[in-house]
Structure formats: C-alpha cells, structure tokens
Length: 192
Image 1: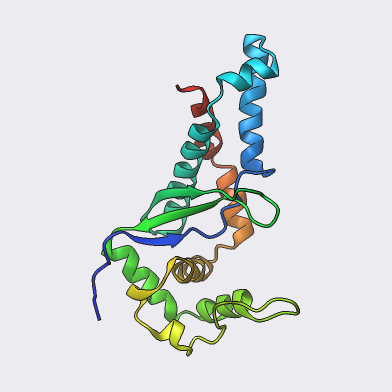
Image 2: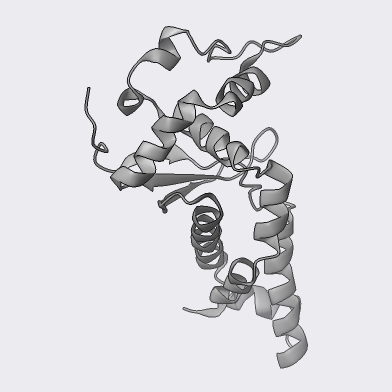
C-alpha cells in the first residue's frame, strides 16, 4: 500500500452548481448587461464580443481555489465537463490532488463519522434508483486502498472532509457565490 499521492489523482469536485440557470450563469449575464449599458451595445453586439468558455474557465478556477481555501485541501482545476444537454445533469469540475498532505487528509476522512453518513446520504437505494456504490463502509469498494479509488469515490471523501469541518453544501455554495474572486472572474469573457 502506497503512502504517497498517486501522480495527479483526479476527483470530481462536489457541490459545484454548474453554470446553466444558476447564480454563476447570472454573473455572466450581469457582465454582459453591464457591457451593453456602458458601451451602448445591443445584446447581439455584446454577445458576439463575449468569450463564454473563457469566463467559465476563470470562474471555475476561482471556485476551486476558494473551495480549497475553505476546506484546507490543495486542489487544482483539471477540466470542466459539460453535458451535451442539461436535462438531467449540469457542469462538473474535475480537480487534481497533487500533494501528499491533501491526500493524507482525505484518507483520514474515511475514519470520520461524516464519511459513514455521506455514504448513507448518497448511496442508500430509493424507490426507482439503485446506486452504483454501496452505502456500507465495510464493502470492498470502500475498503480497497484509497489510491485505487475513482473520481466519484474521492469526491465522497472530499464531502466527508468538508462536513467534518462543519461546512455544508448550502454554506459552501453561498460562500463561494458571494466570493468576489468567483463572480468577478466573469469579466474574463472580454479577453480575446
């Protein structure tokens, strides 16, 4: 069993609300409207000048940076994964865990009561839904070395770590949406 971080371990960042019809999308819309007002542009003119992917990239980087500060985890944005249609899912952020300290913190989270509760909350079967992961922490999927876990399993540890620190999903989303570095990153849409 390895005691060091696997090179560039990837995880799905939990609690990211995505862009489509969220407050983050609203920050981009506000930036567009501000540009229209200050320069007297039509929506069509401002939209033609806007670089939406650049704004989303900048906002996602800021989101990950602030998430890292609040949780004490050193995470870096790897990529934004957007669905082809937003019917059933939204944008997701894949992050990398590149240092031993963060990886050790996450491994420690397996011992927290919040880890067991997270498994129950996320993976208890419900009517019409059968989860891919078991809700029992003694199941082999959860007892194999953390170094072998996939992005979703590592996301579960990130949630358990944050909850152990007293940070809930709602508190995290509210705090990060109110973080100037996140909403001000929408102005990156004008850089060509």
